[in-house]
Image (cartoon, rainbow, N blue to C red):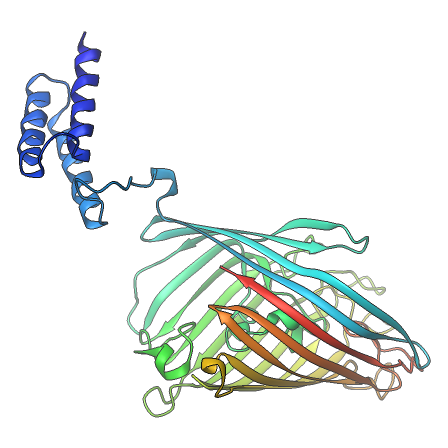
Length: 433
């Protein structure tokens, strides 16, 4: 009998709360009377009554007051956000082969598809999982984890603010930062990743944050609200070093860090100076039985404005994350490279059309231990139309010139490889929500 009474009271509360058959002015009064009655009969406790009232206040704060026909989200979906990022690519061109030879291609591809779910569990703890869909060497589309981490948000510590710690499969300190300055990752990877040094995620623990809080009105001043620390930002981490799509083959851990300074936040808010470093060992044992060195030193100057973006970077490396950049003795090769990028918004289509260009130079054997003439020079230029909030259409021309002993991108040099032409015309549709 008590359960029937309880059900009846709860049903009445629900109908009254939804505004059925009772004027709003009377609903408040009856709701209070019913709650008091439930307490008197021992159906609910004072603590449960307070919880009901608190829930009502929460609904009001979110626009779900009495009489509103909308229903509140289930608890499991509160704080959840879902997103997708995909690159639909059409490319036509030629690939370089040995001895000035080449092979042609003409294809549509889904070069990447990311599906992300984030959830806020507490103000100090968030989580994220991202599935990366890619095409393997057989042409089959496969899914793998790109990110899966707990994100802790400690309180500010003096000048160090807006801190976040990723525990699990998370961002390494560099590429996410650069890709929010150069937004055209859909065309291809950034210079240091395209060379084959490392990729964008790894298993480990990291902490990042800002210097001196956030830059006020960052989007209006620089065109971007990402990494908008007033005096810059930083990111430090300890990782396996193998990257997110390779297993860990050694006991060494990679120490990685980025330091970015915004020296003149009031006078030139878009100017930033950045350093990134990795100190580790390669993930593959060399012929001499040792794991080769894997070190990176990279510096970049960047300037962001709502209508203009310019970057210039220089990097030196020893070996790479895979441990495959070695000479015949198993010692890591020393490399060097630089890259320039620029984009400008054109005064047409409500400034949604941008012209951009990029130039990369990379020497695969900077101290000529395998051979001299081991560099390549890549140039690209194109137009990008930002249709709506990151959904964009891009048209690009790209070409690469290889010196006589250079290997293909991500490969070690080859004596007398004399690679042929490498160029393509590319159209990319980026889908984002």
